[in-house]
Image 1 (cartoon, rainbow, N blue to C red):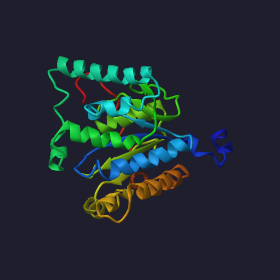
Image 2: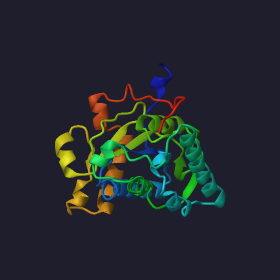
Image 3: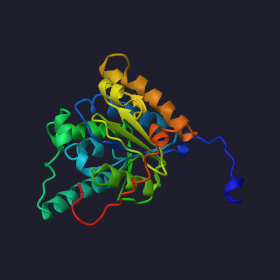
Length: 258
């Protein structure tokens, strides 16, 4: 404690921020509001030297070509495809299918195929080059936009991102997933205004204004980037105010985990 008490707050650049990008309880609005808005914020962060980790390999299935096109090198692109092939083999051995997605909740929210879900999920990563691909919980050393291989199950995925160095989680949801994360604060982006109105106490920003025609993706992306900076500077997230996150530690265990 005496050593910890010597630490003093000081100004530091946004390059110290590493975001873990998550989506859960997705709906038909995810790919046109919250995910693109988060992607716009990621682009701003990357321009300022920060890092963003896209994950959930089963949920980019069918959209991997959008990421390989952005790979900084052939080796990076091939590493991503290798992880896709691993998942195809993994699910086949367990009697599953990579196309056995989206979840019942996703379907109730308006998503009908894994391709719809994947195209929307990939939008969280913005538009900059894909700098590196990492295995689960592997320490992230590259700066910029990177990918980490994780299951699609949000607590397991986010746990791997935090283990790899994410000091903040950004979580888009259209169905109202309640998620907190310790030690890294979790910011939740609502995809539609109806959800925001129902769960404003648990959501950090309303991206439904994009669907409502009241703001652009870039406007909300800039607003959310500013919220990222405020949260990194100590402003509590809604999850922290509620005390969510104590029970969200969920490593990738042996057995089928999608």
